[in-house]
Amino acid sequence: MAPKPPPPPPPPPLRPVTGTRQPRAADPARRQAQRWDEPRRDGRQRGTTEESGIDQWKPGGKDEEHFRLRRKDGEVWLAEVAGRRVGAFELWWRDEPAWGPQPPEAGYVHRLMVDHERAPAGTGRAMLAHAERRIAGAGRAWSRLDCIAANPRLRTYYEGAGYTVVGEQPFKEGGGGSRYAVTLLEKRLGA
Image (cartoon, rainbow, N blue to C red):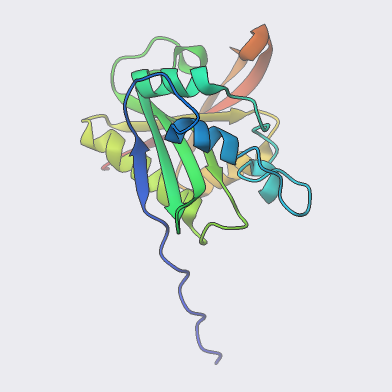
């Protein structure tokens, strides 16, 4: 019988992007946004799901104003290894465009991104678990998220992390007034 492979290295530590001031070039949220736009040696975009074959986020799709508003109304978290950003996610406390008006019973995870070239194995799941702890710590029973309905690979990823599909929002409004379908997933916390 072959010996078991060693466990993967621990995931990187997470830190919040804090404050509500206007982002500047030296602002961590702006650096984070710029970081994900850097191309890799193979020409694919770093920090997007393109690296893992999951086509969801496009480089440059979110500007400074987006991150400023997220920090005002929610949280932006970064994962770093040796001073380099290797992952990020946003935690919102409401999400009416996807979920409609809801009682304050959930937190909503958005834009979970991992740099698969630099992040240790398990970084995405570690960030998702961190978001779930933040949500539960706020006294909310559900972690919710959505993904583009035409993205079965990402849906499978979230289902593997314990999320259940609960519906679809066929007309979520995106930037510039575009509309697209999203699959809604949720996970009961602390059960």
